[in-house]
Image 1 (cartoon, one colour):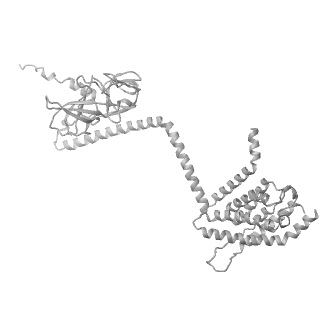
Image 2: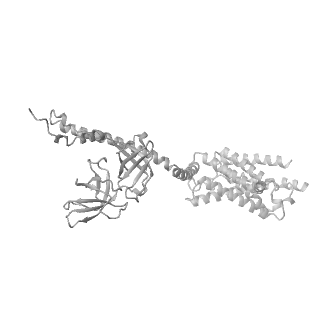
Length: 183
Length: 295
């Protein structure tokens, strides 16, 4: 399976899961007025898992496409796209800081637990997802007057997203690993 | 140019990033939500501020044109005002005179004034007889002997007219005085000369004011109905009073109502009944000739 096709399929898979999640109303506990309703935003995972060699301009455009797809589905103008383009722009810098070697040493590979290791990958994913959520929810709430609610939403949503990311990694890491080993 | 392309290539990612984020902002602003309304209104505030600056700048360059149009408007309004005054006066007198039946011969004829705006193209205040040149002449209806006033007070009298220009003998001259009245109605003559005292463009004199008249600094001296000026035009403001010991009368120092130093625009006032009045007044004295002796 070529890298392009794999990423294409991953895109639609993540979008489909995201739409399913958006239709559910998740609560950390079932107190109706106690905790804000939130939606985990797992679509940044597509940007996170793009191959190392992806040029920045392509990552930006793919981020915009992902974001605008979400905006079209969730009817949010350009809020998802704004957050998504930001993490697409910052991704190579974060990766360069975490990777032991240069990008050219990982031909055809995507960031994964195999080449980064669990701590580094969770730092990478956690940082960018937290940033994405912070930007998105700030734009969505459009005020810093209720800071606590904003932070609560960001934290709850980002935590849930990271749980889903870990689940995704546990499900699909073997394939990536065999692919990597076969080369 | 090459450097420009190098710059674009070097910062292409950043430029693309900023462009995409801007696109997102535009899309957010276009949605009819809190975010969209806030963004649009703040951008309106910014553009409003910029438009204000721009109009202030353009306004400065248009000041000349604006001034001219305002002046035309002013002359028009003054004409209307003169007409209204005229009709109000006529109405007033006709109702008053209606009490005296069959007395229509007593009906008074009121002066009627026409105002034409003009621009000062030459001016002096330093001479003993100062003249002002206007950019209007006989083609525009300016005639010799018309009064000239500014927006704030009297200026002078038209003395020479060519086709496109007219010269005005300023109040600042030894050749003419202005008939003026104090607020209580006392009339007198305002002149620029006071004996041999040196002339200054900031001082006018009103001699021979009786001592018992109440006077205050800041009282406005206005033209009377006797002069060729329209009535009630300010001549000057009482600045100080000097009591002449010998006669017991007072000499008033007036600050001219018009600033002759930077005079730019004036109105030439035409009194449409001047010729008739002059012709009538020229016959004064003819009644002294004895009538034919009766047979």
